[in-house]
Amino acid sequence: MAKPFGSTSPWADPAWYSGRPSPYYTASHVKLRNWVRKWTDDNVVGKEEEWEKIGKIPDDVYEKCARDGLLVPIAFGSRIPKEWGNYPIAAGIPASEWNGFHDFILWDELFRGAPSISSQFIGLVVGAPPMKMYASPELQKKILPEILEGKKRICLAITEPSAGSDVKNIETSAVKTKDGKFYVYWITNGIFSDYFMTTVRTGGPGAAGMSMLLIPRSLPGIKTRKIEIGGGSMTATTYITFEDAKVPSSYLVGQEGMGFKYTMSNFNHERLWIAFQALRGSRICLEDAMTWCLKREAFGKTLIEQPVVRHKFGHMARQIDALQSWVESLIYELDHLSHAEGSKLLGGATALLKVEAGIIGKYIADESQKLMGGLGLTKTGQGARIEAIARAIPTLIVPGGSEDVLLDLGVREALKLSAAAKKAKL
Image (cartoon, rainbow, N blue to C red; front, side):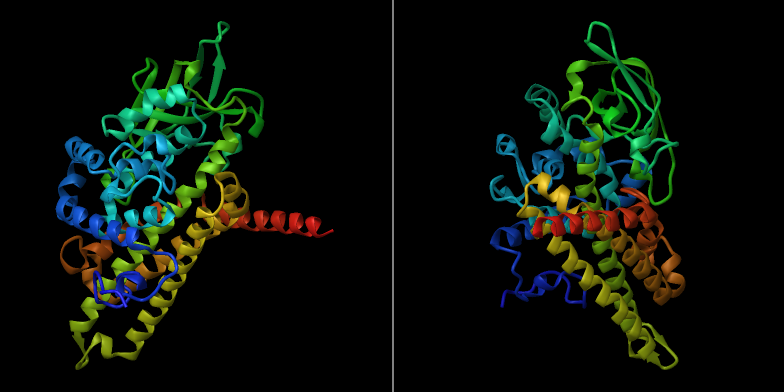
């Protein structure tokens, strides 16, 4: 049995941290886990409040993230292309060795140390993968180095007031000029960054008329203003307007008419990433509530001595362990499928996982606040982490697709796979 690592409080860390056997984690994963925990403790913990006030991670810290090897795996997720493996990678893990469980551990430990900073990386998480998978080699070489070095930032900007989860009905249009050198853009909204990875309508109605374009913020005709939302000030959510912005045609990502397909395939990792956050947030809430209940006395006993309190912890624990198992199962499957196969076979399952993660995260945050009493409402002291996580729960439930849309997607995809399996048996 391996030596225990991390918290000794029940369910505060994954079971494999305590030394229990797992089929998924190797010495490489242990190395990364130890490295990220130390890096987060040294560079992030205790600085969140200061960064919340200025609304972002300072530029010098963001560039340090690049130098220390965080941005490459954040940009590429579970598979780091060998051509970008010469950039620093966290803990010195070789690009060829990096897999979905490394990605999971990286985020799990970052969230543990500072849950609110995840919003500073969402643009990289969802904006860079289309570059890796679909952009031309020339566009990759032009844009990715400054992104991976932390000098520029990228985001995915596809949300519209009239579309939202209904991506097929995006109205933002781009028309190629007669000489074929530019696309001319007008109106959408998204989040602030140096580059906007945008899905737009270059053809007729429906999915077939959509394409992906990378838009530099420096182009004339682009205006931005920040939108304040709940859950933290570091979200950098921004209203963007494109007024006759001329985008070089070389900034087309992939092929015209493939934007909808690219966008849909990009959602899987975002939804899995949201589940990572909900899982670690749930562990943080349970840990802090447990610490409080072990010492808080009421009616002549500590709270943990009350059967009704233990009953609450039992319900929270069973959901956390179940979510951990589902997350690990999907990571394993994705690691053993191509990107195209994973999108086809696991898109529905990932959608349902994201829904379940949001439901569990909300349940555990609510129960933890009840156990903390008034302390669970305070932004400082022993209840501060629970309060912050409970306040941010909508940012795990709304982005990446609404619950109702994803539940429907999960069932439709399951029926589609069932019909294909039935046909294959004939």
